[in-house]
Image (cartoon, rainbow, N blue to C red; front, side, top):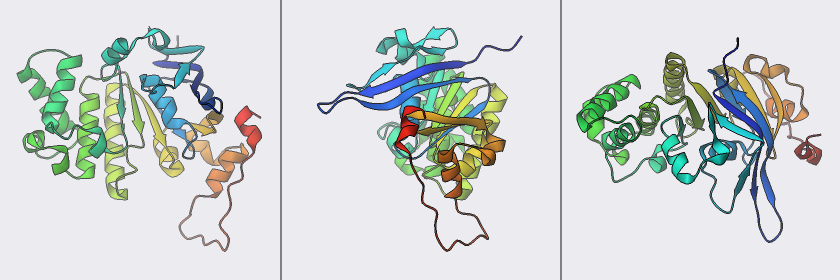
Length: 281
């Protein structure tokens, strides 16, 4: 008997009303997530980050979220109040944001923020939470956890800040981790290190990971499956290792636009877009 999915999304829609009419940021997005690494790719404005925020209940008013099914394990996310989402976030589902400089609290030390997350979702006293935080900082390969524990976000590099953010999001051992462009603010070498840490921790803990990115090379090398989004809609789903065999013209256009080492082009290809794709054609 196959294992039940950690996350089920069926016909998810996110709409922003305005005087000029409704803007449909996410249109009928459907997928399931097991204990795997799922990549969501697309251009800026394709709806991939909004999809992740909708799952977390983080779409700000006047945005409206609706779905035929939106379930995290046995929890129907459609019926949750803001209070219910606060209990869920950081506990059963967590989100790593793009830039730790803006995601971490600038007036709290890194250690205090990780301890706060542990006490909110795991419980126990301050001493136990401190031990768990130091162990988690060591798990994300920070060499001197005691020193970093006492530092503030502005005192660490981008790569170390992102590791601290990952530690804070994983301290409560969530079922699902959503990573929204977690390496875009980092240089190539640090990107590889951070992804290796994510991979090790996600696999070791049996979690489900959603990696949101515009980097097709990164997603095809790191993930198991890939969703390609255009204008708020999923236009193609494929195995990450077979992304080069994608059939949809939008996916083909994205792939053809990627630079290749050792291959010079006299003319850069222009990505073509068909308005009919937004309607599911």
